[in-house]
Each structure stands twice: as C-alpha cells, then as structure tokens.
Figure 1 (cartoon, rainbow, N blue to C red):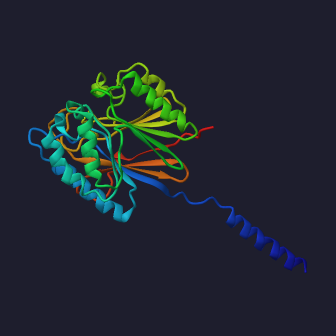
Figure 2 (tube, helix red, strand yellow; figure 1 turned 90 degrees about the vertical axis):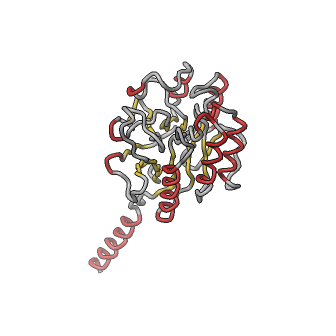
Figure 3 (cartoon, one colour; figure 1 turned 30 degrees about the horizontal axis):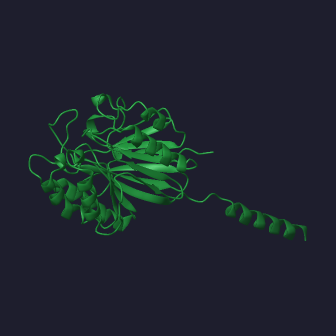
Length: 289
C-alpha cells in the first residue's frame, strides 16, 4: 500500500511539475520598417518595390502586423516622387504607417497626408502626421518632425504627452532622425531641440528607431545602447551616403516582440529570403512599475 501511495505521489508531482513549466516565448507583435527612399535624380523606386515584394512574401511565412515608414519617401516632396511611389506602396498587403522626413517638408504637410492615405487604400486612416499605436505590451509613437528633421516646443510637448498617457508601457519612438551625437558618423545631423533630452529621459522609453543618415550597415555601428535607450538605424533603400556613396545595398528591418518582452531585430537584404545574421540585434523591453 505504501508503495502504491508513493507511486501516486510521484506521478502527481510529475504532472504538477510539468504544468508549472514556463511557457515557451512566442511572437506577440511583428512589424517591418522601411528607410529613406527619396531617389535622385530619377523618380524611380526599384529598391522600394523589391522591399515591398519581400515583405509581402515574408508575411506569408511569419505574420507581419504592419509596416512603418521612417520618412523621406519623396525627394523634396515633389509631386512626381509622391505619384511614382504610390503604386509601389499600394502593393503592401498590410497597413502602412509612415512619418514625414525633412524631404517631405520640402512641400506641405497636407500633401504628405493626402498621399499617406492613398498608400493605405483604406486599410487605415491617418488624420495627423504624428500619432501613436498602442498594443497590449508596448506603444509605438510615430513623431513626424515639425520642420526639417527637428521639433518645435509643441512637438516635444506632444511626444511627452503621449508617453505620459502610456506611462505603464514601454515605448518605441519612431522619428526621422535621432538626436545629434548618437551616430558619430554624422554627429551634427539630427534632432537638436534641447528639450528632446526630456523625451530620452522618460523611464518608459525603450528604443529610438530612426533613418535619415543613409548609412551603410556593413560599415557603421547601426544598433547600440546609450544609457537605458536602444538606438536602431534603418538603412536607406534607394541610396547610401555614409561613410561614402561607393556602394549601396538595399535593406529593411523587421522587429519581432516576444511574449517575454524580448525584441528581436532582423535585417533583410532585398532579394535574400533569410535575415542577415551579422546585423541581428536584440534587447529587452524595460519593466515599468
């Protein structure tokens, strides 16, 4: 009888132990980010088209919830650049969330908004060049610059207000250019408003995602942590400038948030089905109290 009871005890203990094992992390949110296009001199978008085709294929294998644009699609905001980019971006099978860059400020905010909604063909409706997407585990703030690549006082106040609204969640901030000094390859280019330091100092800011610099991913430090904040550069699709213009490889990046709070960042070269291992990066979202 004692042997039977011992067997039952160990059997139930085994079941309890198996039931208490932690759940295997799984992806709860995945999105792709497209960098600067703004081709010149010709308003043609072959690499943007290749990235769109790749993302559409990729989402058949691993669901991509949406695509973000980091600004500078239309060089100098000209009508022909907007018009030529439109049929390309309309091929995306998932919602597209763009922000303005300094190039779009070569024209008007109204023109940007008109085409941003054309690109989506009703999948989503954008009412402002800056907005926030809130999810269960994270919030994404899409902050278009007020002028050039920088912010006015009102723009900084808007970002801080959004961060306060979701102060119990980690925040990913999408801006066209990071603050000056983050990337020594062109340390003077970027956000210079002194109060942007208040944004960076918010305890729920996890990462700043930016483009603007057109950096060659193979010849710069494109992903890094400074203080408590991670900085992720999105490479330009149509042309590279830094450290020089001698070679260009079209790439885009995909962010996959895991259920345990780990963010995986993969980089894809257009036309290559697998991510480039040399450019992989990961970070954990901060635990907000």
